[in-house]
Image 1: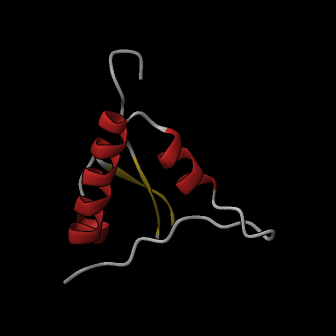
Image 2 (image 1 turned 30 degrees about the vertical axis):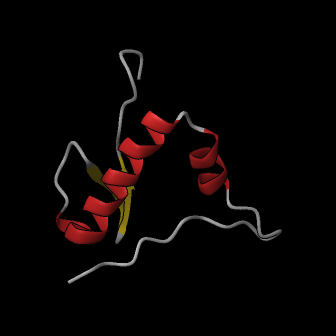
Length: 69
């Protein structure tokens, strides 16, 4: 079963997550897109350290890029 991953869009229609992703170097963007694909496949069952429950059904995707975070 595939899960739907929604990115935050503010009241003006800006999508900061998408803007962040497009601004990343290709290697970092590819890593994050692979994690998003894992999240779509696993949904709320995607384990730590890849995701964490924030509140209720809201989850966050957790990742590090490079040695500094």
